[in-house]
Image (tube, rainbow, N blue to C red; front, side):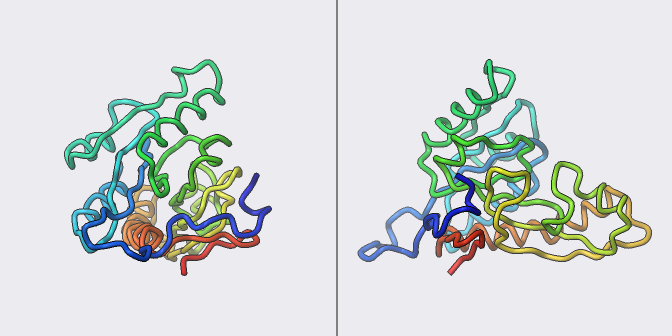
Length: 223
């Protein structure tokens, strides 16, 4: 059921429960990547600080041989690969991915440059936060930076949102604005978006782990 069609879905995490102690492990997440993993690296760097209050339990990918997996291994984080091509149908891939994620029992999942649409089984079993290089609902999809330039937009940015069954249609948690300069190329604009995307993602993922997320009437919030 799409998140936007229901009331309060659930808290992704909640505040530290009564009776917990400083020796209890902090909440853990699984991060999904498809490429270079620069957003992942920002999370790995943040998670090194115990005060951040978050563990990265595993990093999953939809293909082998990517820098994102190398970053995870260099940080000592377990990895797994779940390729669409290894399954007879997309639904079976979705089921398998849901199981692989579930093996780590994460509080939630972060899609950090994961270039596959997540199916109903993953979204039933796990709450997923995504980062997107545009100010949604403007410029959804895989070519957001290119599309913003082609449209002649004067500003764009990044969005952190809760994933639903649509393409970049889930409830927004936070956004940051980036001006588009006359001399911008797709590469330069994307790099400037990353400069604000990384800290925004780190902030929102940390707060989600520490404080929780609710989705009410299609709107997401962190207490």
